[in-house]
Figure (spheres, protein in one colour):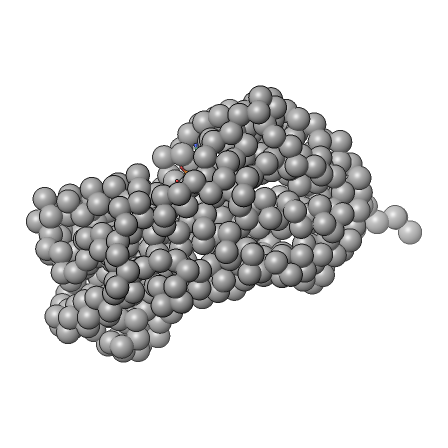
Length: 483
Ligand code: TXE
């Protein structure tokens, strides 16, 4: 299955015909080619987006909301195919791709369509004048997204961007093009006006860079690593492009002494190892109160030991392949670093699979791993690993837990486990982060702000935050007549 660019409503090769290979990380097999786009392709895409911009902006937000529903309907009809493609592209368990990636991609379009219908006019009355705030489109916007939740994160940007009257030039990760291509197929099937959605595939420094630099692209919404985010900001900021940056994380799972241990253990496992730890919201640092640490850690090891690491297509698989052998080797280098820094591996750290399945060297498989005994300021405990690795740390007081939780350059998410809600809520407000879950994890109300502080990014997505980012407010102040 090849991934072509989708420009002006048609599927086309890169202008120079170049392609790159797409590999299934669970088998190491090439599963197709991807258009290797460059600056010339971005130019064609931006021209198409410019041509369709006025007509798309001239439609009402409610009409555009109906188009989002049509896209959601189209994705719904092909939900199983989304999951199959996502699992093949990423190596993630098929069950996860169904439950999370496919479902949330559909939900993203439906949510913003419904959210549009709930919008009230923004009017501010004065004694002698009325202010009416209009939310105008930016024009052509650039969307650049990562490989860990490909369509989930792309649709999270496409839906509000279109709703607010923009046309888009999107670049999915070069490692995971297939579901972006499916979204384009749906756009074509439903007859979305040509040029509204344009997708160019390829390497970040080539086609991504061209998007950042294009003078007709007025805003960049980026989700990816902090290092790349820093480069995106350095390139786009001097061009005064509006910027949204959703970057890395190194989130804390904080288990207080009054936590329900069963809940906390299963919550910590889910937060630590969902998608093989390849979610920026994952709880990769587990902070547990000294008084329950031994009991908690023992139960955690038993639970993680029992996790099924195997072929993505098996219904029992909980940990599939990581995104690539290169990423697997990067993650393994952190396990070695953890031992060098004085850590003890309580479980995992090896490439074997669970049960009768024979590990093939071609698959990027790694067992979920727990490292204990590290200082919370060690590199292993503070740098983003983005794999199935958690470190465990003990604290004696809520104050110490707060200091430990805040001791990284990131601030994206986290969770607190306690039967005392007031205590958890008070503690949550002292964590430098964007989201704190109490006695749960990855429980999402799409109206709420999503995003981080410090090196986890700039800006928020979700609900009004997305509508705000993808529009330019115009305030019209009308003086009341004298009589
Ligand atoms: O990111 P990259 P990846 C982060 C997480 C993880 C990383 C993994 O921290 O480390 O993303 O995803 C394009 N100019 N999050 O490796 O390399 C690249 O082609 C323009 C956090 O994909 O940053 C891809 O499409 N574009 C996040 C996209 O940037 C460039 C959730 C991201 O690539 C480019 C998911 C360049 N010079 C992952 N170089 C969150 N906070 O929600 C690369 N790209």
